[in-house]
Figure (spheres, chains in turn red, brown):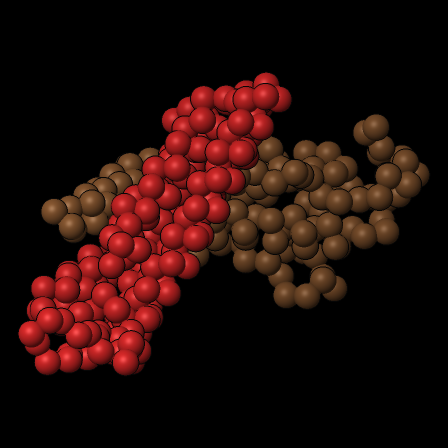
Amino acid sequence: MQGWAILPGMPPAPRPRPYVSAREALLFGLLFLSLAVVCGHICSLGFYLIDRLVTDADAANRQASSAVRWGVAALLTFVPLFLLLDRRARRMDGDGMPRRRSLVRRWLATITLFAASLVLLADLAMTIYSLLSGELTLRFALKAGLVALTALLIFGYYRDEMDA
Amino acid sequence: MRDRLRTVATVGIAALSAGLVVAALALTGGPVHARREYRDNIRMRDLREIARHVGCAVEGSTGPLPASPEAVAGCGNPPRMLDPYTGQPYRYEVLDLRTVRLCAGFELPPDPHQQGANESIGADPDCRDLRVWRPDAVLDASPNADG
């Protein structure tokens, strides 16, 4: 009987149930992947720019131009894909069907939020450690800020999924 | 609005990506610059191959480095001595018992970060001084040893 909603004066109606759809698995799987690739390369390119723009006497490492161009190529490929899939997902939300009970979508959102939480916590711990050990440079602080910003954007993107 | 946060996040991700792509292209150069860099890398690879070939040819010998790498035999195919893009010959000069100076028509100024451990940029930006590996024991026995 738990699968039925019984309202006074109304006939019993089936409750919406979580479901798995191959089509949604493809859509949300690709959305998840594109978001992960985009965020990874945002951090990678951001680190490169910070290294180039902020001098740090302690650090001499420099990313090769080929790695930077790979990051640019990945962003130029995956950002449009991410925006396209996001638009498709929003359109599905707007058609009145109870899509938010999609198990695939829920699980991918949960995994993403879990990973973003870990990144945010590790970022915070590293920043505090650097501060306490006297190694907190402007360059490090900017990189930590970029990682935190990226993790917060992911939180913002998937926040609604957890309320559904 | 339920999706407002998601919209802000989506726009933020797209804007951040766009800004980074523009900044990265501005700093590394566009496709034309990358093509020049690629051609210079091929030239540099040729010069390293010439130095490696010379090192192979004098292996075990105590004499000076050969006056011309083309004369080297017994170390596989001779290295390419012409710039594959301009057809101009690479310049070769022996500096001492361990070092050769090799010059090519590089299109970009030298980047000190891209030099190998046994390489240095000569006074002429088109030239690189490449150190040929030779064991100390061999050179110490040489009458021409330069220390």
